[in-house]
Image (tube, helix red, strand yellow):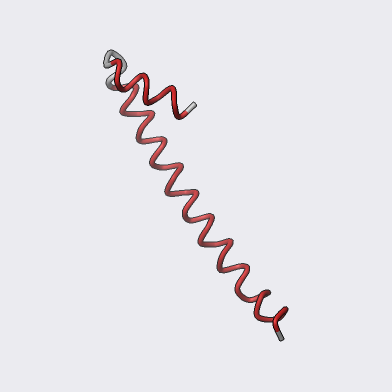
Length: 52
């Protein structure tokens, strides 16, 4: 019984994790774009380096 429940829950958890990762990727891509736009700003460059 427990294993059956686990099998149905796991794909949902994986799907949620993938969604979260996609959102995080989009956020870091946006940060990279902003960093490129403000490349002269030392604050932005420092924050950009932290991502790498």
